[in-house]
Image 1 (cartoon, rainbow, N blue to C red):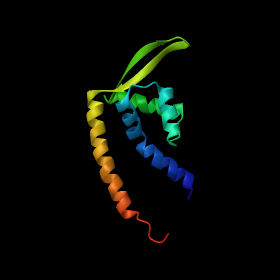
Image 2 (cartoon, one colour):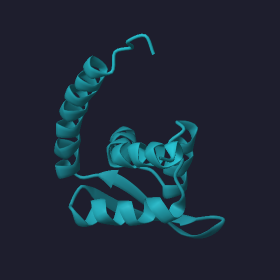
Image 3 (cartoon, rainbow, N blue to C red):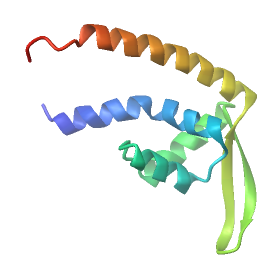
Image 4 (cartoon, one colour):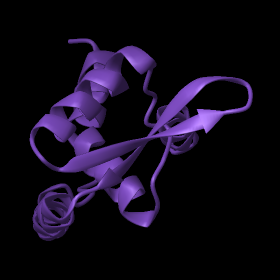
Length: 111
């Protein structure tokens, strides 16, 4: 079994939660989101992020606005909707429960 595949799947599983959490702090341009995720070692490429942002927007969790750019085409900035904020609160609760359960079941046992 390839450990890198398992690591990638674990990252993908929390990516939506992380993106919503970043956008809860402030609206963001996709390249800024990618930078923050890379800084957190959640390696993401545009080909992964853009479809996810579209899916979250279509689900009513995100809004976007266009802003003119001095160095190219207009930029799309994403933010959470009210529904997105409520959804994120539920994910926060679920993450806390899951984190506790994982910590409980993966205690180091003379590994």
